[in-house]
Length: 180
Image (cartoon, rainbow, N blue to C red):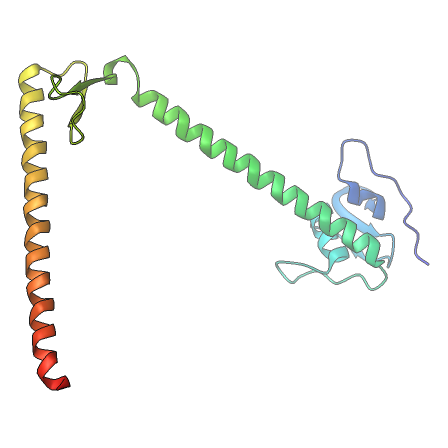
């Protein structure tokens, strides 16, 4: 039986206990199970050799590795990929947050202005947000543009509803005689 000799080097990959480094070649490994010498690829390629899963299909599969070791290395690779993906996700989230923080400085602080302050129970109350340095005339122009846009959208929806209901009525009325 092949030896699982060697020991994991402190602070290094646990897969090192299943291979030996090649003297003078930091990327070279010798498999402790089958004796395969890999002159390049390092510990990553060696793990592909043991797990029989090589994304590049350039590594021989180890014929003598036990199923237990194969599974142990597979889990090691899986956990490492998972940690790497989580670290990348956290970095990406932090980058997005820092970009957002940059846009929310004092220059971009927003002032909330509710219309119709007299009637606080109004359900269709419009709320507008403005940069604090926006001129009151600009605020009024902004509000009127938003109102016009909403009115235009409402009119378009009403037109689509009316035209759509006429089409449905016409389709229904034309299909009734053919059924009889």
